[in-house]
Length: 521
Image 1 (cartoon, one colour):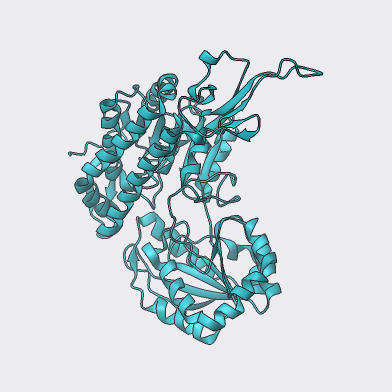
Image 2: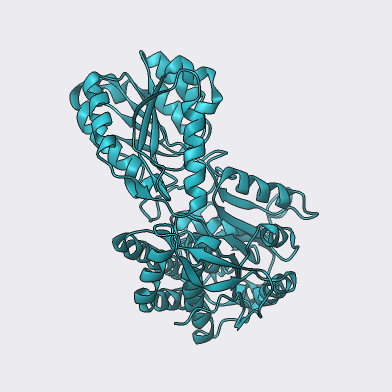
């Protein structure tokens, strides 16, 4: 397809505007065509108006029809794969295999949510049958289930141009819930965004969805994003990015006359704890795995392990040093990420008590060199700056001389997406205090593995206490993500004919439900 660089306003494209921007290839510096037109304020208002008008009809469409819509989006994206991959590679510097793999994850998510809403039990249907003769007061008929919130604003992530972007998990889960979506494209991969948006726009038409079910705007700055969150037509926000960006959206949403939820994934250092027995038995193997986990994708994963707590052996440190020295500098997704990486790394290296074990040169272009550093547990505990995320291929080893050091360090951690413990069976059985502490700090606990793989299924929790996310009770990955864009609604004393199918005694959708507090037989 020929890229035009114009925003999507329902079934139409926005006109030219005076404010434009280009995307550059981070590996070569080449400016890519076309120019992208930042949406006007009028365009934004139009997109929100269309979404608000679409909501009553779209939220009432049967789950089977919405599921078919999601599957059509997935099919359209797959059909455009030969166009998505080269553009994505040019805009991000990512290798072909990563681009194809991420497309597979993206369409897999869409199909997963289609299956979920067809099965139907996710709505958490509960029925309490009336007892008019109950004493001392009659019991009313009460039935509840989850219903969609309304139009959702989705902000694309820089590090996942497909899986956390235009048709990513936020969009898929919001559409599955019955919410129209307005996407703010990421300026670093605007062309990839346009191709994917065209697939969704086509699916809206093919499946006869209401006008305004989907829109996407380009924004060269941050003003439109803030205006999007502040507009009263928006009822929830999905965001993946920096802590500063997420915090700004949270504050804007909270300051509205009608505050709305912001589901922001922001920052995490994903600590790894290596207990002494595991270090003695397989310290070199763990070190090798750590090198791979930290440097995978130039460290540009939200689950990259940025802190390692261990009683460090000589072989472990030597393996780390040699492993990091052998990892070639890798292209980062765009110049801004590279600049932040080098700046943050320099600031960390300037902290008292922080020593560099190995560092690969990061000075050429947008290439990030892998870096491994170390400090003592007392230094870490005394300096909150050592707790901050550095987005890129680096990790800080905290030398712990005792179990007490590890536990004290764990209590100093901020909220995390993940926390990992390596230990022998005997050690893990005695590590209840550490694991209990980490359970309060992270959304996903891992034993004897590494956090960088995020499986997309019904059991995954990709979330955690602030600042990992703005809402530690939610997940942005897996089927549980749909709950973010819904709320529980109760129907009291409604005639059977007026109830949603999920709440009718006849159970025409044949879903799992609770009746009078017990699972329906």
